Length: 136
Image (cartoon, rainbow, N blue to C red; front, side):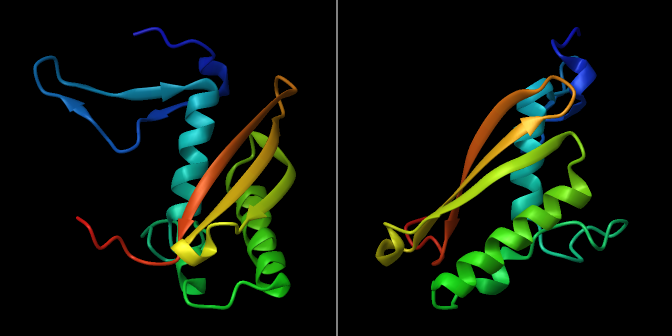
């Protein structure tokens, strides 16, 4: 299986998918692998990974806090620090928090970054929900 831009890294797809007919695992590579890595990093609690207890971002502990300027600054710092220590393939350019749907329980975190090895820019929007999903 040849994956384009594998020099940026190759990892398991998220969520993990297995093909039992030919015993393979769904893999991601390149910029998609970086996106998936950021999703995993931002949705992981500190201490959740057994062998990497400092991996994660701990955004869920802020779930019921009032979304004021202090909390937005703290969230940006948490994300920037987590990416600095656990995602060495990118440099964070900007982090912006969009709270226009706050009353519906949704906060969007916009992250703009540059991939170090290729100097190409990327961005992602991480939806952070302040309430649990009730219509499951």
